[in-house]
Length: 285
Ligand code: GRG
Image (cartoon, rainbow, N blue to C red):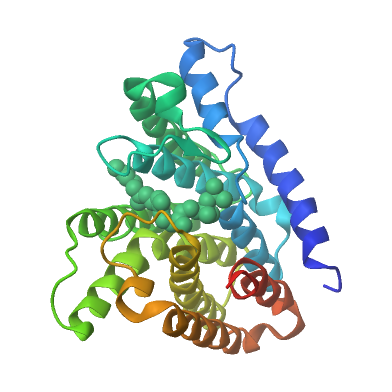
């Protein structure tokens, strides 16, 4: 695809946001407060990285963006749920998210917990209702993979370890723990976004393996970049804290390089995925 990445992102973000608007209940639907809170949290200044990865992966495998939009929106709903719960006083205690008050600051803690639950539930309802995935075995596989990626073996497990992590042990032990946390807390959803896009587009095993490799490198590089840029980082265990900024930037560059190598199988169709890692990771450090 020979278009600039900014144009591509603008076009896909418009498509994603209008699909989210269709897939989320009306703010007037009873009980209105929960539907208003769900929309409040979803329609902030989000980058829409994960749904864009669903679309780009599908396109790299010969699929169409319009066919994967509901799945892309489901992934964004799950991501938004994780942010709402992460911001709660009991976890990260953040007052602002996506350029405005965090969900619990706007709607209260109880409603924010329920809003996260509601988005998670709605995401699976959307995945189960996907009309374009005629193959019910494939649909079940996708639902299982998403559930696994965000459960205790994935995103939730990473979050648990992150909350408990201590800055102790040897460098090697700390790095092992960091990779465990990042590959689950941040990486698992990024990875499953790519594989859902690929699976819906009928990707071959080789293509799915390539997306997995790209996703692993992308997820880790994205999290290290976030930690490099986040001056208010409260966690004890981060790459910059263990290795310093210079080595962390070097690590990001290595991961980006490896991610791009894994895209060879897609030839020209992998160009957008290449541009995405440059845009969301490489160009930010
Ligand atoms: C389920 C209790 C419970 C908690 C979930 C896993 C989790 C807690 C939270 C993950 C949220 C988080 C802060 C992950 C770190 C990864 C990260 C950099 C998230 C922000 O993603 P962006 O930058 O955000 O893509 P936008 O707003 O652009 O979508």
